Length: 298
Image 1 (spheres, rainbow, N blue to C red):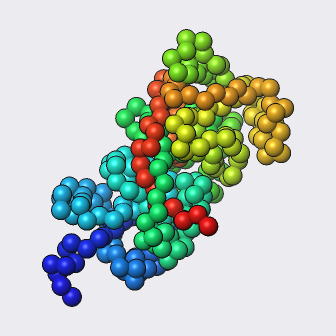
Image 2: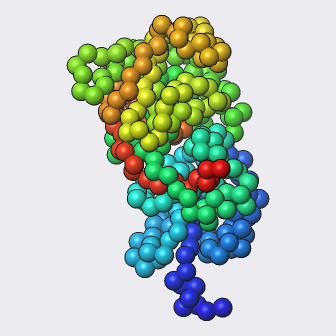
Image 3: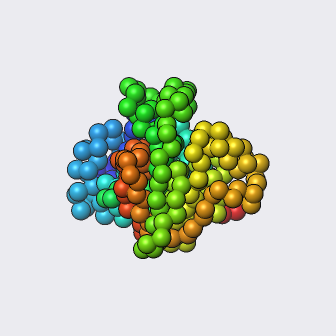
């Protein structure tokens, strides 16, 4: 053991979110042990300010191999926003893990560690809403209202069952306010009741809402759903699940670099599964904004 050598060897900063998913510890322990076997020094942080302090040291930052978000999509979003420009790894421990699912990153700790150690990264566009970046998508409307409600009731680890009551309560009270979407500076809005601006194709429960979205094309794929009732919404979702996108005449599509969403009343907005305020809001894309550790292509 040589402290001088160890202080200059590559290390991995791991931001752990103890509130993610069901709080599984085994994958995280396996991840840490596997990194050590692969010649990397893992350092686990549960407190955000401790990680921020460690990465503020130029010498330590210079030997950093990866910054890993151990949690759900919200943890990834938090890490990216606090430390832009650093290469990001993911240990998916959340409820949906949409980013990890998109790129084939497993929950298995040893396999996720091997991906980080191998060092293969891909460039990823990031979206921006106000001063916050996102990797997957932003939405405004019913789904964001459900998410706001679920997070307001959250007291600990959150799973899919925690959304049952917020979904039911929101469906019973939501009045589908009109949203006006202006793409790339246009003064002619597209009008609807649910807006999704996607950087990646993943969506909760595997719903194929924006299957054409890519994270490396410098564009946001936008869907504007026109439905004034829960019945019409459920009809649209069933058509999507059956792959009948071409028959959905009440869904408008656009591909843009920026958009603005307006409404007469404040409507809930969410980004990557976290509340992101209400309308009005401005959204834009930042091409190739981060590098993400992913499995090597076979």
